[in-house]
Length: 446
Image (cartoon, rainbow, N blue to C red; front, side, top):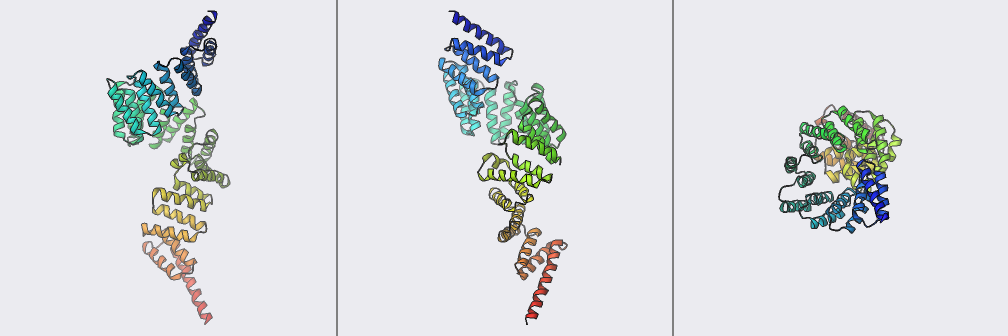
């Protein structure tokens, strides 16, 4: 009996410590209670809540699973396990927990809502919508949580009008759900209504001034409006709350790069790379900052690493990186063969454009691939018959190959579009001198 009372006392003290936010002490007391009576499901559940509050989700999940084993008919442990599974990225597992929760209570709004979230995170939008409509049939009234979750699916599919309607309906039903206005702000930002987006972000921040996600989105909206100093202020506010936040450091670096503060950009991007080496396109932007500072040798290893990620098919970088800009950086770093590879990939992804073909031609010429440069220049001229740069390249290639008539034809064609182009005029002089030299050679030969 004494052992049982001791366990209860530890559990009671744990509750007191939990309510005071003293997670470590609450955990210690609960573990003492469980050691004395390991078959008490509520204590395992409370330990899970304590560990979750301390941001130790994997351990919390184990506690919830043990609680479910001890009381399989209780809803709360099932819900908690599913929510933590989603946070850990174990979405398939989360779906199973929510299905079990719905077998316990078919009217559980949160189980439907978080199951929709699981499907959205998996990119399975058909199942997300099916679950949403099942919730509408099972529940007596339209639910704010389900509307908010399906809005995320609609936003990912760029169905912004429907997403906006769902979010407004959710707000009318329950305006206390976190970040509803911020999500509306994201919709407005995506549909070119930046001022309305800012209003929504501000209203959301009045209720939750320390919300990092909302501060990030607010800062991004300010950047889009060209209000960089205000955006920087928001990102610095994030760093006051969370000094190692890589998103805030990256955005500050991007603002510095666009503002030509290259040393600051370099420092911010270096820090991001140290904090999160897998951060999308970090090596490319770090290399750009170094190039702008004139540190070509230091930039090259980062460009090589970024190119290796692309070659390996890294999905994060492949989606995030601007291939045209990256190819330009490789050219600046005197890596023309690598630049040609990237421009060719950009052509495959984006289709042909005169600008892209001109860059590909330049990279191939610099890499010593004259035939490849000529081919790309011809394709550029087919798309843009007045592309003087490509015409110049074709004339120069013909001149260097000794095909003087072809070179003359290209020069005449280019000067017809731009009579004052210095490059073509110089080529015409070189052609004239080569023609004289060839003529003199024939005379001497005679």
